[in-house]
Length: 461
Image (cartoon, rainbow, N blue to C red; front, side, top):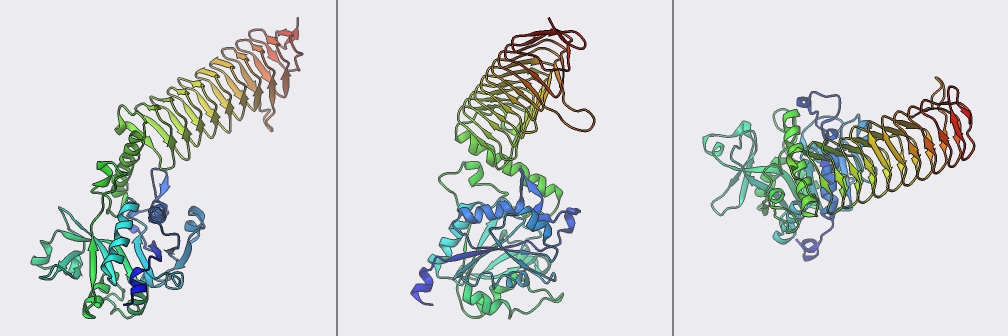
């Protein structure tokens, strides 16, 4: 092998995801099941990209629409038309990897793999000048996994699958983790020439036999530890775990959630009981924010510094400014400016935009509305399809009647307005700056600025 080949760091990656996944018992392809709000397969491609590889091919089944709908379009797709084994699946990506000198092969159902581990595998592959480099692991219970058989010199001689183990190999605790680096030209020349198994499948593990038969070097590495990771994530026993059924999916979810929470706490977020906090993969939380028990933070949520979230809050696809407090409430698809407090038992949804220093108290709901700075909406109120100015007071039980049975209509409330308790604002309607409504008023017409209206229907005094 030439020195230029040895020094080449031109890597492509192939993610194998064409398996049937029957044990999941689901209409959703196995690699698309989510862990902490992200499809498993995207967790794998995230790790690949973070390891420095941009050239990625996804090997998928013929019905690839669910994959294309769920995944990003930055990867190439290759189709395995028949389930003829892992070696056959990898062979389908040969054209997609035509520009790569080295090929990283991995599976779309091993979602906890870390970028640092992949980077170590790639470095070992370059340093060892091997045609094949793989990750191996020591496990307490190797049942069902391919055993790593070494010769007297410690070199890998074979991978023996569970169905083929004898008494001697059954006792081996070093197993194949299913992550490989190949020298590309050697891989494609030899992969197609593998002898099929009795069931007609080409098995990727048989490539080790081919390398040994040619007297070529097979190298290995073990999961690495990165200086930037916590001890729990760096020594995660689940990192190499494949997800084949719902119980393993739950185990992977717990492990990923622990990894996410550890990272956030190391970055300055407080969690008094991290085991009871559920935070998705795509969430960002600022320093000195406290997340209290039984809180779920989902989607692409961004939370600022110095906030208190929970207990028992649900935040989904929301942007929360600095110094906010959300107590036992739900915030979805909405934006809160700095200094907002919400709850308990309130619901902010549907693209609501809440200005700074707004107070939204007990059992209130805001939907698709803009609430101006300093407004107070104490309790048992509903503002839907409304625009509120600054320093408005919304009395207890006041609501916008925004739906007439066919269409939604808008309510506009000017700054410094006072909306009395149990007021019904029948949209479309405009309340002028500084206007007031009496308790129990039913407002069906526009109210001028600084006017007071009372009664049913409301009339100006």
